[in-house]
Image (tube, rainbow, N blue to C red):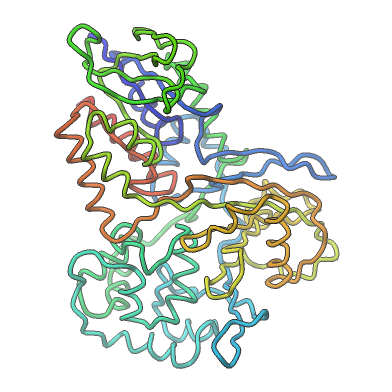
Length: 498
């Protein structure tokens, strides 16, 4: 008999789940997306420049090539010829000057990140010293880590506490924090070593010097080939558009503007598959127009519903908790514990002529103790050839992190003004931008705090006990990047249909 898989959420995780499910001729698939578009945090739009419109990503603009899931999916979709690599790969760090009291001054200098490092952890003290990011005492502390006899961590620990004990706080605040914390919009003194930096956690499990453990692992691993990152020439949303088109060609039903209120068990006569996906406003003030085929339509304040044999819930954790609470109160309670940070990406375009800026890096990382609003500045038109019109410098500026919600409270004009002040401080750019765009993401980035992997295990265990035909997946649980989201979506379907 034909089975009906309903995917709640049309982000990359949900679309990947639908793609996997649609490979089975005995499965019908429906994707329900609450918003007006599919793609989630993957969004590409145009900047209106004097030279004409330029296509620039608003969210994720690349993905790891050494994790195969995103590249493999691009190949499956016929997008292999659209893949491109960055022109520049090395970033700098803004090192603020210090007043006598230790408070950062409004001045500072740009320094290169170490070349020999793993997620900011130095593999060579001389290389670290050459960057001049750290004080001589901090470099000496990092060099002494080679002699560490510290035991392996007992369970999960924070990245910051573990690395501070091995290398000193200055390295964590000036290098690891801006790099790892910037990617996650988080505080490395709260983020999980196991969940956020599994490569470091695996080396740490050997005990003793982390530097030596990382060197051994690198020496034993196959030599890396090809670029670390890939992107799509037409923007990352090219992947989403291809999925949208080809899923529909496979017969998948994709419904936007269709919020899901809850997933419930059906009574014996309501649905052969045993699950009902209620479609309607979460507050219960009214259902959306139309029910999916096989559903029971309601009226007034009653939600419509569609029957399902299996359900994949691929939405942010707070929404997943609400949807799953009727089925698994324990799983929903765990999902409610995941904290989010709203983030803002602001894109600014400047004419290159007249800019006194060294255009030799992929971007700039900014430590939290610098006292600035920006957390990172990406030189988009230098990294990605498809963003370069030959006239403008395209910058994408990230703002918002675990202990700074100011960007979410600022209006667009106030935010752009504050970030332009940061650009003047860090890069010396005070010119009027030729174009600007503010892209806000809320609830934003999930914080993988200490114990996150245990929390995820509890979520899955609760669902296995309470609702074995339901899976939850997505960036809030098992990885923020596109490869991790694609991996989770496909794996969720495989486990359901096995």
